[in-house]
Length: 148
Image 1: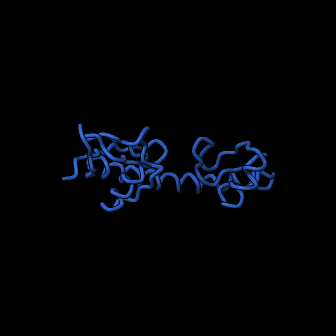
Image 2: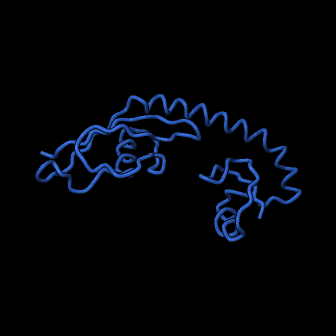
Image 3: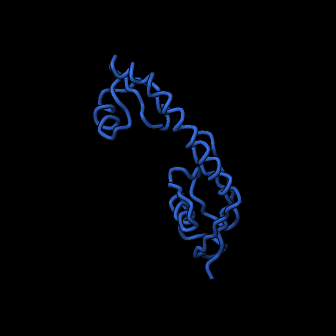
């Protein structure tokens, strides 16, 4: 089924792209959530007119994302975790924890934007990448310390 994306979808495409997806995915997710519209001949003609406004919207979002990435680059967050013998941590620091700490510092970051391969399970300082927009990323520092 052909769909015109109205929003960026990870691993599928960017807004304005015409993509082929399975009918169930389109019917149950993309269309009800207004992430995409069906690629009918009428919608394809309208797409040409809409592409200009989409390009402007993308440009403004890109500028805002670059400014946010610039502000995020120098940020560091600190976590205090309980440890046992040999400084072995109980639990871990996850993407959700990092996103909450950034929200406390007035940054609008979702946990899906924090790129962390595995949860942090040791004491120390770690660089973590935050994907702000398509190709715009920022690197923050995460400090994990012993709870006293």
